[in-house]
Length: 142
Length: 153
Image 1 (cartoon, chains in turn purple, yellow):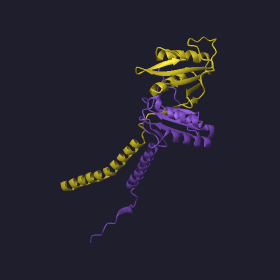
Image 2 (tube, one colour):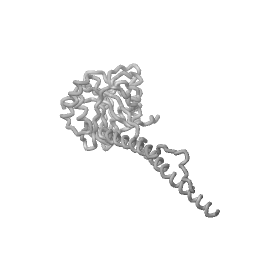
Image 3 (cartoon, chains in turn yellow, cyan):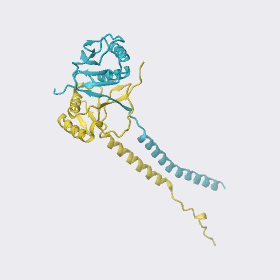
Image 4 (cartoon, chains in turn yellow, red):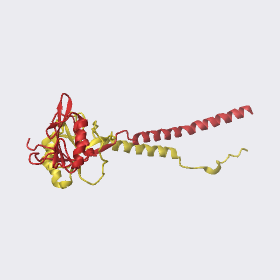
């Protein structure tokens, strides 16, 4: 009589491979989706280069980033705003945050100063004097 | 005997094939993971500064050929735009080129680094040159660099 052979050791283990697959897929999904959300406010612009630029201090200082597109459109929180609206928004923020409020201007290197002037005017009228510029790093040529 | 060996070899081959599939899966996932996390963007930095709404009328301006005895409160650097070229003007004195400007800024900052440098660009000048002027002023050693803003215009 042929005795059926028992499965030796009864190796019932969890197959890790599909689990790793799914976990990595989830990680990639969240990475890519968070990246897309960040791009809403970080408009792609050919920023000017500077040798004396400083690394972002990552402080708790209240900051507003204003992107100035090539066509002169001002973007506040990723949305186009007129200079009048920008002034009123900055005035409201200045009232809430006080002197610490920083305005970060992001603009293309080929754009004329005229496209940035409305931002400066809005800052002055709102009483914001702390204006910084986003630049790309350039090695000092000495 | 030969048939048994052939069967064994085929079985080993099949086992190897099936083991490769999840490995390729994981390797590709790792590859995509690293591609996603790698940053292809240039490092963005910030250039600090302030705005200045005051007029340049009642303050002592820097001389165009400074000497260590000179005393001045501020340096007004105007950035003009003529024939698609930047025009550098320090205290109403035009300079030949960017090198002359940098030399003058270095000598002025060496005498009085706490003097206020007011940057006054014309609307037509590209931001590249405005930021250059700002950058060179900071590199020269000026501690307070500000943009001139005309209020009420």
